[in-house]
Image 1 (tube, rainbow, N blue to C red):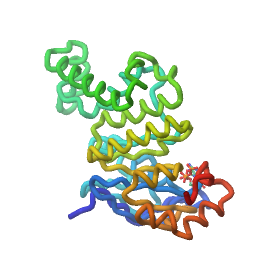
Image 2 (spheres, helix red, strand yellow):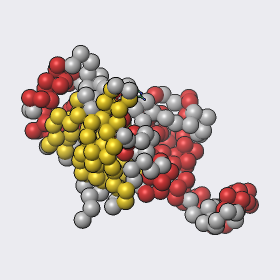
Image 3 (tube, rainbow, N blue to C red):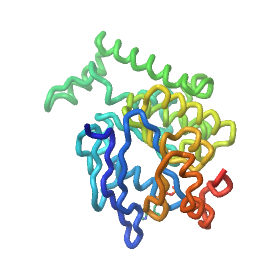
Image 4 (tube, protein in one colour):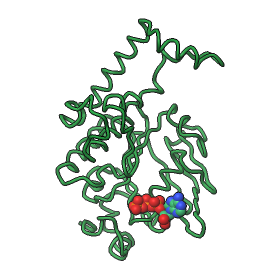
Length: 278
Ligand SMILES: Nc1ncnc2c1ncn2[C@@H]1O[C@H](COP(=O)(O)OP(=O)(O)OP(=O)(O)O)[C@@H](O)[C@H]1O
């Protein structure tokens, strides 16, 4: 049986820099796999190659048995892959609720008839007239968006109508994750969901990710906060200078001499240094 996600020999070079060298791993359905490593190790580049934001120089990615190497992000969204970004990307002028509804766009059916050529025109007309089927779909998506926003307790629900630019940094990160969840993804790629968060916010985010994992969602996680990685991960891949230097269960990785060397030996560890080898 094909793996849920299969990454084979992925490579990416930027000029003379090897950002990702021969990445190779499988991800099983329902698994939470973390990618860790010092700054510049190639983690975000690897995410970009998997999620269609960047094209690999070599190698392949298969998702749910389909070759998705170099596939456009829209196709990946339709297949059920969603991601978040290291620095959080939201639509600043849209409200919290609308940001999340944008994420549900690929799930629209009533307002997006699958008619060739005139489809976009029909969609425009249906959005303007809003017949009962379209209204019912909008209501269902709104209910779903509220359910997703409630995963973050009282952080976002009281701010439904606030424009995203007015939110705190931590809340913008939460909105971004909520928007990714609105896609009802089969695979969620989270790039440092707790970056810039204080210990309370980090603990809350850890709970959210834990709940998502418990719900059966398959997750690929980049995270510098090692305690969180150790608690959440089924398996961990450690990268350094574009290469995988270790892979295994959290406890084994924690005690791996190559991992300790990579973290403690690096000049910059993006906050991981203080937490390395806990
Ligand atoms: N668009 C780009 N152009 C040139 N070099 C790049 C580009 N993107 C990444 N790199 C380089 O590739 C290497 C890997 O970077 P990447 O951002 O993937 O690392 P990372 O592990 O995600 O680091 P961090 O933990 O700091 O986010 C680095 O040396 C980086 O400078």
